[in-house]
Image 1 (cartoon, rainbow, N blue to C red):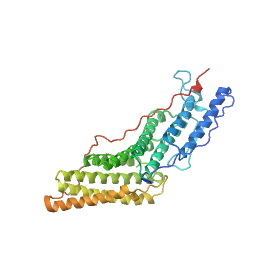
Image 2: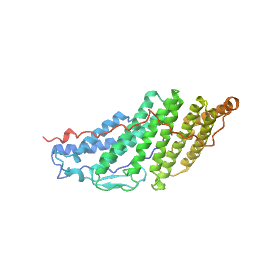
Image 3: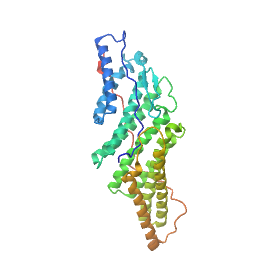
Length: 368
């Protein structure tokens, strides 16, 4: 499933010296500053290193964040603000707004911006792994887990750390609720895609596949609606991707719901469900073209060229023809004018974000 997922670019950042002349004068303080520089540079390298895996990423993030906590958490055990929080300036771009950077003299801004990039890295790692030929079951589980880890990081930043920023988040920036909410829901939806593919492969009950596909389509719709008040210049392409995925999974839901209806001898309703699946699939195909032609940040996915996409078109066609044949020979059911109302609830298989916590303060900050 190479080129199956749309990915926005990583955030870029300016180098940080961590030189505090006159403030950090002891050998221990100098070592902390040197280690901060080194662990930050190492982590930034990891983002673009194609050999990096989740274990290496976790080690690199823990090393940097444990040191950075010394600028944020209280070092004397009181509730007083850490005086060092505001002594270093940090500059970051956003995933949607090109090279336009924003800067804040606040270590919490660095913490959330860097962690945001870590979450984006997990989504890119998942996409790369999903793109391998003949992906194994263990690799599919790794894709699923990485997307849930990313969702957990985004969620933790939104709930626990972004509210602590002194400077209000500008509209349309990564740390703004609409953008971060979209990332969370997209990660959950993509993790559920892995579950759906697995359920189909293992020939699970059609009811299970239909319910999961319906829930996933609703996730994509929710993500798309979250972005609808953002500037079209930088959100249109992303929204087209979310819309095409929504229609693709609605087609799946109607297709598998049609199979369930047929197995319950409701042939007329099954035909109507499959006709709706055809409509949704055609809409998804049209949106694939629109998505490719829409300018905007991010790598362009090519879902309509994937076997997973093409196979659904064939499945809808064959199942509909089968239903029509059986209706002409056996059932003679009237075909309803309205598409069936899908009120499907997935009892399992829904992807919940993996809870995330920053590492504890590095022991290098301990006095004495």
